[in-house]
Image 1 (cartoon, rainbow, N blue to C red):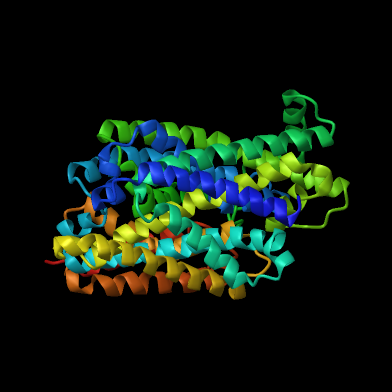
Image 2 (image 1 turned 60 degrees about the horizontal axis):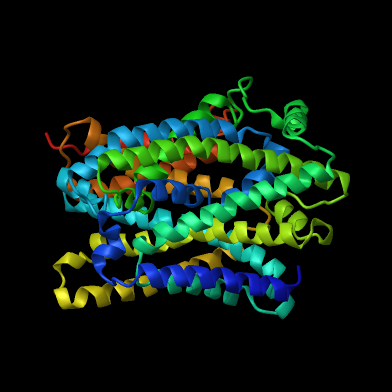
Length: 480
């Protein structure tokens, strides 16, 4: 596809999103922006959450990592499933019982105002980093495919990327996102299926059974790693990490929970969570199969691109055809934006409710403050993404994202675990210090783990270690 064709495709895509925004954003109220008036159908929320959970990072990084990590990521995905069960039957009942808009209000009621603010700030840092990682990846691809040809700087690409999200979310907020995420998830899944069909045909795999046999017999399809406990992909470590990544990055994350809290009641929210978690396992298998076929195709055709560059490089080859390239772009943009738009909205929600306590402001000023906050968060994301362009070069972004999550979500894991599973009361004014010290100790444990632990290599389980350290630290400041 030419740069002009790509620009027209992007313009048409965002034209549809803006139309959806116009239709769903007529009620420009804070209740609609933050909670969608608690009237969202559970099945739309479930389907849209697939795209929000996967994001552009999964779309690019999971297929690109198959060559070096095989299907080991599936161990993490199995952990995801059990993490979603914990969310459905432990966390969601608490959130619905308390009728929360921001889930961090729970920490205020349980421990005090400092714990509440600490949890809110931990989320803001975590989600800004996570959303920036995801948008950084899609901005890089758009820069490579389109904007370099017009000599447009990367910073301008990032500004355009964020501005488009702001444009279709600034009025309807979460109410708009429920519908745009549904459309974007559909685009993403169709894109993956069409690319698999093309690659299978190019590799002379003419039926589902032939694709299955090809995958089964290939050494890259190895799923389980039990032999070496020091390996970062060792099954127990990967499974537990996946489980706790889900509990924290979904269950303790305002972004993902804000969508669940738009359902009419707890029962519908649980139906949404369980159905979504089952479908998500099969969708991730599709991405891994795609990665194996991409690697085989690259090997046969002398393509040297690796990791995050593999899928974009192959998808935009002339011999792939305009249709496949167009669906790749639609899938990539949809995957990235379905995660990023809700992140922008949830960051705005958390900042308004948790940090500046919007409900205490004069009623006539609340809408104006919300809109200004939305612009402020958008500008902050632009700055962080541009910084990432200098920090992260030639890496597989999904692994960097999970590493970052291990440090930023650990304090949330420790706080909520202590609140839910114990009756401990805290010296609230010291909680912020524990939330800083635990990630720092975790960082040094991770750096020196191979030397200190007989060659043991810490992987995603740094999140669990961080959560445990936070939990222990909080016990030390309990009230007698």
